[in-house]
Image 1 (cartoon, rainbow, N blue to C red):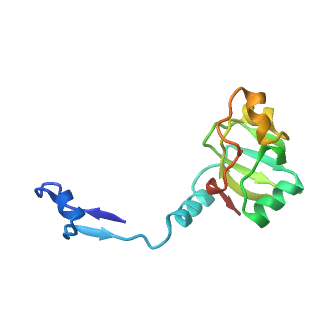
Image 2 (tube, rainbow, N blue to C red; image 1 turned 135 degrees about the horizontal axis):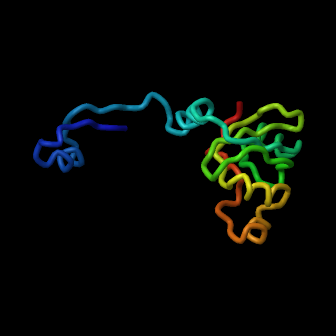
Image 3 (tube, one colour; image 1 turned 60 degrees about the vertical axis):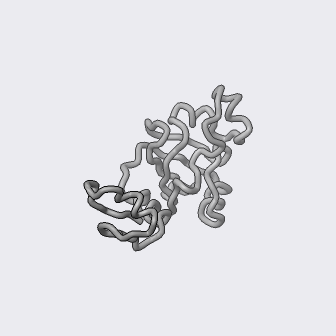
Length: 139
């Protein structure tokens, strides 16, 4: 929820906290996670692709899990952490879009490896997932 109130009104924030009505209250018409998923689905340009094996494709589409590096067979494109990437199944069909936790050179080094091997492969581990499920939307 968001309230737009006159900032020149004395003690307006204190009054709002005490239940007084000031300004205009905006209530979202959908849950924040759903709005985020809609944003992910169509508002960012993809910078790269992650090609998945059958197991990773199934986990994403049927179980709603995060994408782990062990399920990635190929990395394409030039992207950095936080960029949008496409995830493709073994038939090269786009099945998901998401914000990636590693750059393309880092993803190349960890593809096919389990999360427990990330730190030894890169010298650090930002996240155990290549793409977290909260930053991923099926298409």
